[in-house]
Image (cartoon, rainbow, N blue to C red; front, side, top):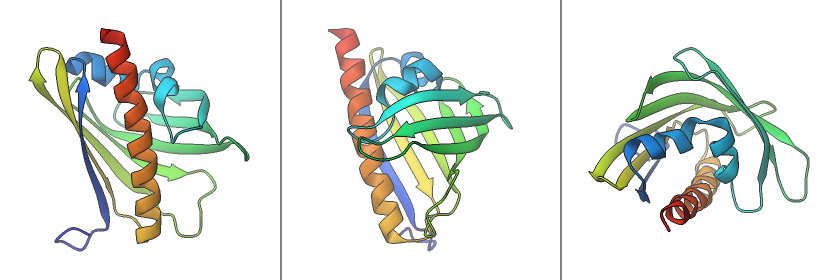
Length: 151
């Protein structure tokens, strides 16, 4: 929990890739589908209207259960440095509520970027922890994908 009482998530990752390359991975439906979600999940479809006020819908397929959807609306789209959007499940868990995700990108050098992710306000610590695990695994896959593109 942050000082202002918000139950939030804050993650930092160093990624191989320039700001435009990393921003593309975060926003292009075909690229996003390659790394999004926890380990073992697949993404059969991504619909995205990448502009402030535009909507998105991501189909997520867990390894051993039914397909579900993540939906929201873009708040800020400032290529290649900032992306902010609402985040909610189409059929939410009773402990879920809509959150806001903000992704900020900072150049480390010509070939590496720092990604800072903030998400909140979560209804419960259990849901925050679930999102932390999902984001950590998904960003791990993104890091591997970007590193393999440089190899």
